Image 1 (cartoon, rainbow, N blue to C red):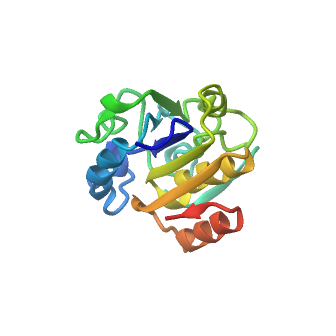
Image 2: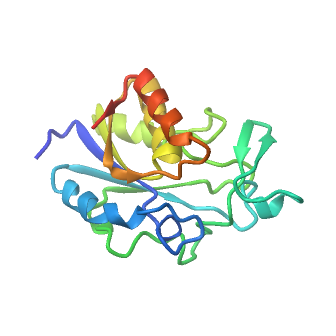
Length: 201
């Protein structure tokens, strides 16, 4: 068992990000057994859940003439436009059925504000609006986190970079993540994490 100062944070291991889902990440379901086994090492387990209202501003369907995976400018910067996914209370937003959700001390929902997307477990995409995770970790005395989940090059990377920026030691279990790899986004994400001092395991 790891010390109480460490936590496992599992990012968005939901049906819509797994094969057959609206925004499927190739092999996304393959990591579930490994994530479940890793939970046994931690006293604190946190799950994040993408939780969009219908007609979320990050959906390509809300932008006339735009297709999924194109980009647009939002007030907070460039935004990738996605297929409609992880809509609140839908089957796609549910966790993968084999994930041991009962082990979670906390389930953190993000992306529920229609006007802004939220990749990171710590902040929405404006890099300013907090999700509350930082406060939760600090009040529990957690100084180090291990990240696993989906997708490596978006929500996992943004969470890792924010953790490092906040002074939280962070390790990414690359074997327990899978990537979208949109136009080379995976190699870019790995380079950014390395530059920020994130441990890639």
